[in-house]
Amino acid sequence: MSNEAVYGIMFYLVSAVVLLSAVAAVTLRNLIHAALFLAISFVSVAGIYVLLHADFLAAVQVLIYGGAIPVLIAFGVMLTRTPGAAGSNPVNTKTYIWGLGITGALFAVIMLSLLKSKFAMQGLISKEPSIEGLARLMLGDFLIPFEFAAILLLAAMIGAIILARGGEAK
Amino acid sequence: MTIGLEHYLAVGAMLFCIGLYGVLTKRNAVAVLMGIELMLNSVNINLVAFNRFVAPADFVGQLFAVFVIVVAAAEVAVGLALVISIYRLRDSIHVDDLNLLKW
Image (cartoon, rainbow over all chains, first blue to last red; front, side, top):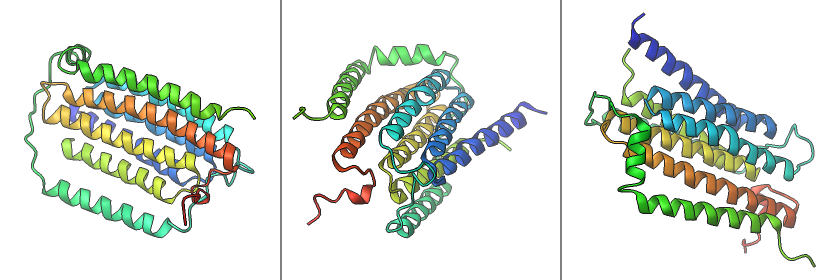
């Protein structure tokens, strides 16, 4: 098999895992199972990053979306108990029909505009490793946003602690 | 069978629509947050795909994806803290029970 055929098979395989586990994550009735499929979907997105030559992002994806965020969501599920796990993820019957309609319409619009668009493609691949390129950008042109991201994370951490701790004990 | 930019954008669009479906049709607030995370992931796929096929000499697209991941992590932490706080006050995290501001 040629390299291109292997690449194509890998692409379709990884995309199928991403999309099917995402569908399971939004349709399963049991919220714990839904969170598990969400984690599978996140980890396989890292495979898409590998196919796109973004090695650093693939590692970050596995670390954050494979580790930290599923744990946070599991905490959220367990701290907010609903009676019985089986029906813990009900469908909102009031918004179901137009939710489906809006989603389908948006998908049709995106696919139509995708078919009509022409992009200025460049075939070459950068020889530079992506970590070096990212570091050069992060500590160069994007230094201020980089520092602001640190402040945002600190503010979010303090805010989450204060919100989850609750008000003063009476 | 050459996999190009359009294939990745189509995957991103599908993932975004699945996430949007989850946000619009779930009653549990944690499930709504999960849908938002799926949507943010699809945006990252789009950014990295554009980086790879349209501007491969630079890494700005990947850097934007890193910033999106940072904001998504902050969002999910604050969002879950809000959900826990609401659960403590109202004993419910079904989004259509949260109608305090409705006249």
